[in-house]
Each structure stands twice: as C-alpha cells, then as structure tokens.
Length: 333
Image: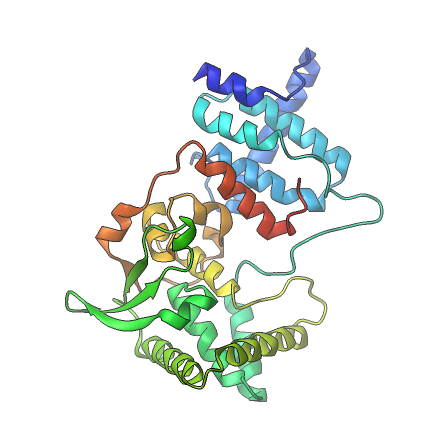
C-alpha cells in the first residue's frame, strides 16, 4: 500500500512545509471537507469517500480563481497524503495531480455547465403548469416524457427499447442498457419493478411508451425527440429568463438518482436501477441526496444488484474524468 501511495505522489513537488503552512492546509482541507459534505448531502458523522471529495473539488474549479484553486489543491493534497485509506487516497492523488489550474476563473472568463442536475418540486410545478396552460405543439408529449423519466431514470435514448412486462407476477419495465457495449453497465438489460407507483404515474409510463412506439412506427423518432427537447428549451427560458442553468431531458435522470438516494436505496441498488457497472458512478455523476423530493416507487431486482461491481483500483480515474467532462465540457485538464 505504501508503494501505491508513493507512486500516486509521483509528480507532486514535495517541499518542506513550515508548521504554519501545515496548520493552514489542515484548516483549509477541513473547511473544504465540511463544505463538500454539506453540498453532497452527507452528515458530519458520515465518512466521505476521498475520491468523491476530489471530484467535488474539481467541479468547483470553474467558479474559483486560479490562485484559490492552487491553494485548495495544495491543502487537499496535504490531507490526502495523511489519509489512513491508502488505496482510496492514492487513487484520488493520482487523479488530482493531473488537474491544473486551467479552466479556473481569470479576470475575464467564467465557465459553468448550463444543465441542471435536479428538478425541484417548485420548478416542476411551475414548468408543468406552463406546459399545461400554453398547450402548444409537443407540450403534452413533453409533460408525459418528463414525468415518466423522473419516475424511472431512463436515459432519453433508452426509451426506444423499453417495454412493459411482468417479472415474477409483478409489473415491470425492461430496458436495454445504453452503455452496455462499452462496459459501463452491469449487463445488457435491466428490469425495474413498478411496485409502489400511483395510477397516474403508471399511465405516464404507458402514454410515453405509446408516443415512442408511434413515432418509431412512422420512422420519425428523431423528429419527436428534437421537438420535445426544443419545446423544453423554450419553456425553461420563458419560465426562468434570468437563469443560467436550465432543465433538460437528462435532468430527469439526475432527479431520479436524487430520489433513489433520499429514499434509502444502497449505492449498489441505485447503480442497478440506473444501469451502471460500478457502485460509485451515481455518487459522482448524478443528482445528490439532498435534491430528493419524493419517495421512489420502483425497485431493482436482486440478480441485477448482485452484478454491480464495487469500485476497484483503475475504475475511479475514468469515472471521475467522465464526471468532470460532464460538468465542464472537458476543459478541466
């Protein structure tokens, strides 16, 4: 383990730090750790995976000055060098050492994602009301799509191959996992048990599947997808003209993740329901527990939960890079 940590530290300039510098780094790292826990919905008494901590830190970079970023990075490096979990800290260090100050704020630029990673209850009510009242082209189909996706967490592209079925006497939704071919899913398919859904929510899933089948049958699925996406783009800017971040079709998947976490599902169960190969993906990429605003009405099946891998050495770096690329458009190197 010590060799692993030494290898991870390769590339850092290890200088002799004064006692005052050590105290400053310790204080700063603890402040950042506390802030990360608060924003990630983790209580002070709970342990925060240092790999998740590092990804959270890098996500902050586009909104802080370069000098501040360098101070934060140095403090967290100091913290990781002394962390008792050699494996996790070495992975985190290996990833952090490659992240420069490029992409942090200068006096003339500010970069941030324009996509919301949650849909609050208030935002949902305002948007749903707007779509209902205006009732323009695509508005009804969009309302159904948004609700069906918040309930199930499907990627927009996955609806093309989703179908209602029966699993051991229970209503279920079977989905072909979109990321299976590149090894980022636990299997070719996943099954969601529709156990505690209201009749309205079941109807939303059925209506959306019917819409999807109708447009696929006319060979116009892309027309349907683009119509709903553009309608959502316009509606959000009418509802919130001063906002910089807006709801997208993919925001529903983030909200599903947040609802799953706040409903008490384990990381392995969340991964199974979202079609992930490893347990940490949803933790790093997707909606936070604190953004959860309703109890999840579906369940994973046990066989698929057992297929989810615990994050191993080597998994983290690629997962973390994907998370940061989603946030910054690949500008964090």
